[in-house]
Structures are given as structure tokens and as C-alpha cells.
Length: 316
Image 1 (tube, rainbow, N blue to C red):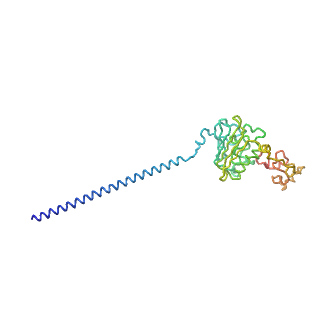
Image 2: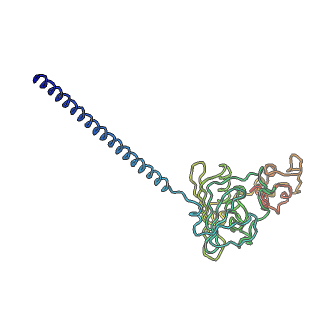
């Protein structure tokens, strides 16, 4: 009997010890699982924090990218609208005006004295005479603004951005400019270069004056990009022919009937010039007959020729 009791007691003790071991294993397992879960949570939180910081940095970089809005561009100026064909020569001080025809955006700025001092355009878009209301003269309007100074015989109503380049004719695009410079000098060369390139980008004109009283500029500076190349043109508002002559850069040419506007056709017989007999004389026909260009308004051939810009000269 006593041996049976000892056996039973031994069996109970064995069961008790096995049970304690399993409980300890389970407890250790729970602790280990809890530790792993806590580590995973901490890792996720750290990842989310890092992601948030990265996103914030990207947004900051994007916000710091230099982009000039109209509000920044026009700061200190009042934006006004002026009809493109307004002939008034008056300009308001410290204003900005869109001088682009149609949907073009060419911005002109005046200073505190009402002088036109700056014109900018992201893109110069050439005139489209097929889809725009262009006159037979090649202009949008029949006349240009009467800015003080244009009444001078040797000064033109000169566009900063020409009609052919999409500019209007009000006072915010017109300055009194030397006629030779405007028609045959650097101004004309610049406009021709832009036309031949099909337009320009990053256009800026800076206009300077000898004093604060006049509206007649002393010089111009144009900066623009043609086919990826940056061009800078600087020139004074003077007659380039007179300047070249004073510098000894010109020489007189011997008189020659083929280079003279008198030619040998002293009887002014149009049939000797109008080779196709249509009653009109082209520049090629006039040159073939011995007349040099330009043909001016006082020349006998002028009525038979097409002065598209109505400036009193053909073939300039």
C-alpha cells in the first residue's frame, strides 16, 4: 500500500513539473511575440516618418523653383488696356500694357515720366495675313500713334515690335525713330532676321532717353533668341549712313546709268520697264531697266509700283 502511494505521488509530481515547463514556454513565446510586434510597429512608424520628411522636402524644392508670376512681373506697375490702333501719343506713367495683336502677349512698361522703357515677350509670333485682318499695306492699322517727336521730318513712327512680328500701333509700341535706322538700318535688319527665323523667344527691348523730358529715345538694346542662339543688338537712334560717312566707312560710287534712278529712259516710257505689259512695275523689272532701289514717292515710276507699307518708298 505504501509503495502504491509513493508511486502515485511520484506521478503527480512529474505531471506538475511538465505543466510548469509548458506554462513557462508559453509565457516566453508570448513575450517574444509581443517584442516582435512592438519592433514591427516601431519600424513602420520610423518608415512613415522618413517618408513624410522626404515628401516635405520635395514639396519645398518645388516651391523654391524660381517662377515669376504676373503679379511679380507687374509689381510696381498698373496693368491697363489700350486699343491697338489708338493714335493718341500720350502714355500713362508706371503702367504695363499688352501690345501684342490678338492673343499675343507682348508687355510694354513705362517709367514715372511716361517714357516707354521696356518691352518683353516670351515668344514673338509672326503676323498671319491669311487668318488675321491685315490691310493691303501689310499693317493691322492704317496709322500709328502720334508720340511727341514723330512730327519731325527725319523721324518715323517706329514700332518696337513691328506689325510683321505681331505688334500693334498704339503709343506703348511706338517711339520716334530715325527714318533711315527704321527702314534700312539695324532696326530693319533685326526685324528681318526674326521674320526669316520664323519668330523669336525671350525677347526684350530696353529703350533709353537723353533726359526725362523727351519721348525721343537716344538708344535701343534688343535681346532675343533665334534658333537657340542669343542675339544682342545695340544701336543709337541716329542715321547710320551719316555715322558711317563720318567714320570714313562709305565711299562715293562712280555715276553709272545702271545704278542711277535716272536710267536712260528719259522719255519715261513705261513700256520699256513694264516688260509683261500688265501696267505694273515690279522691283525686278525696275532694276532690269537700270533703276536702283529704293524708288521714292517723287519718282515717275512710283505710281506704277506697289508700296505695300505705304511709307513712300519701294524696294527699301
